[in-house]
Structure formats: structure tokens, C-alpha cells
Image 1 (cartoon, rainbow over the protein chains, first blue to last red):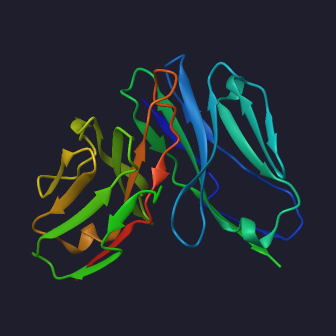
Image 2 (tube, each protein chain N blue to C red; image 1 turned 120 degrees about the vertical axis):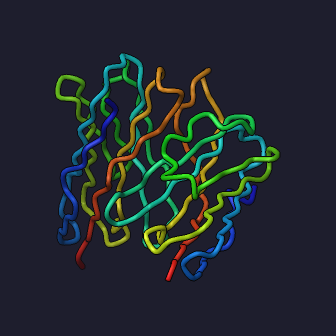
Length: 115
Length: 117
């Protein structure tokens, strides 16, 4: 079964703190992609990153970093020195090569950055 | 490019009425997805098309829902008759495959917020 779990429904942190959003996935496929999307208050989902199952290198993009660990089936997202503009709902998603390109989203984590 | 365009942005209707949501994907994208977002269920995939052909409609809740893609630049999601539990934000997204496999960078529209009274 294909499944993406974001156990944290809502998180609040004070500005400048670091915060990690958890994502755990389930798949039987050996070839798959993982993603993170951001949904700001305006509502439109915005793609942040894509990772394939053969590339476990962590990635850093400015204040954002992603930790992909196949051993624990996790793809966590860390925001360093958070800012109020980071307030949004963040979705983790999964697609499998043998599942007709279906992209399944987790339920999202709502992140509040408090000034 | 103008991005994915959805209409209407907001729709309020009464139970039993027909609702039609529209989507224009990004030119050149041959995948089109319809998602529904609610607080309780999150973001659910309803149906998706490849080259105007429906590939998977297993997420369509019931026969009241139907989707069409008559050409590469237009798709509709229809609910008939509508019910209060259909109230949600409906997103359309488009994409194009890379590396011979859909790599998942979806481009979303701004969504259509539907309220059924």
C-alpha cells in the first residue's frame, strides 16, 4: 500500500528557531520519488523539492534542508532560523514508478512561525 | 506562461444543483490532475489524465462526480447533484514527464473553493 504519514498536524515555533517537519512513507516499490510542497495562506501549492529513491544525499537550499533515510523510510524537512513568511501548510508526497505515476500527498503539517 | 488557470475561484450553490469546475493546464503539459482538499481528509487525488485520456479515476468519490478533458487545454470536473459534503477546495494541477517517468513537479492552480449549502 502506498502511504505518506505526517504525524505532526500543527507546529508553532518562535521566529528564528529551527523546526523539523517529519514525513514517513510506505512503499513496496524500489523506484519512487518523494516531494515536499508548501501551501502558503494564499492557497496555491508550491513545489519545493523532489528526491528519487536512489539518491539519499541530503540537500540544502538556503535555510531549507532535507534528510532522506531509506532505512527508516523518512524524508524530513528542516527550516533553519525560521521566519514568519515560512508560515504555511507543508505537504510531503510520494509517487511510485509502478503505480501509474500516481502522486499521493500526506495530510500536511500546518506550521506557525510566531514573531 | 500564465500557469494553471482554474475557474471559478469561489462557488456557492445549493444542494442538488450541478457544479462545473474548469481548468486550463500549462501549455505543453500532458498530465492533468484533479485534487480535493478538506480539513478532515487533506489533499485527495480524484482523477488524472495523460494526453487527455483518464488514467486513474479511483479517487472519484461516487457517480455524482465526473471529469472530462476534451482537449489538451481544457478540463472540467462536474458534480451532479451536489451535496454539502462536497464542500472543499478543488485543485487542478498539470505536469510534464521527465526522464521517462513523471517526476512529480506539479504546477497547481489557485483552487476553486466550493460551498454547497
